[in-house]
Figure 1 (cartoon, one colour):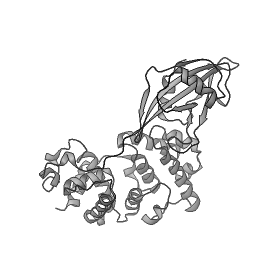
Figure 2 (cartoon, one colour):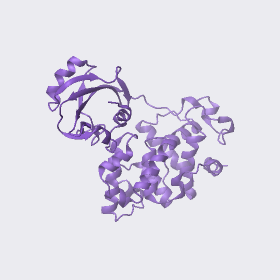
Figure 3 (tube, rainbow, N blue to C red):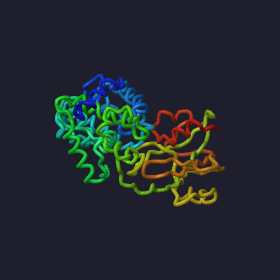
Figure 4 (cartoon, rainbow, N blue to C red):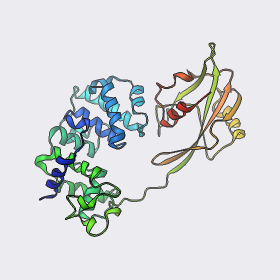
Length: 349
């Protein structure tokens, strides 16, 4: 039995009942693929269902505000993908009359859609013979064929794409692409795969050479950058006695662009109250605090892919504050980094 036939047979018996598997609607397939680039199925499914509930069609997503899209995306990270999601919905609605392109080449012209996503949509929705190569597929192919080329290198990436094309079942590409991704997620798992019951174990080179845990090979990434964030939370009371604060929208490029945040002072290293008091008049001149104190004794370390944020929250009690003012109890609807959303949930005045 061929490699692809074994994978398809396994899939028929083991595939999960996932909401996007019941449709060939390119909008829903595209949405699921973008979300699953961010997280695993268990975490991604609730986000998918939320998006479909709020935006049943691509036109609904296109007509939404960026604020709504970012808020629903909150917690997934890589917010540029959410902005691309919104931009692509507008492109499909405006330039393609609300219908997704039906070819790999046209799909790749859409913002945020690369080889993998274009291949997934083209094959699943239109039965076009384009193999998908995601992390799960890399792992299955690397182990089965014993390939030691780094998957995140230029040579390795091209090699695996070519190999994926050679072993795919073109006649059943819609099912095959989903099958090999599912196989990698469940059977050929990253850690401690159940090799004794694997239908591919008789031909798996990694199993024969005791390389299962070492494949696939990845080039080492650069060490994450360390950054020091000092969020200043101004607190004052309005005429009715309700506490309010001020928030601002990030405008610069980089992480969390267009998300809301408390006034921020970034420093080269961890700072104390004395240094913070000197920096506030220079950088946050709209805050005139009567008292400032540290909310969290130890910096909270928020780990992102390429950077670690050592974060302190400073409470600044004020007679009044200026800017985009919001009552403390009305912050929830604003799209914020999950770091700040979690802080708001636990913050007690």
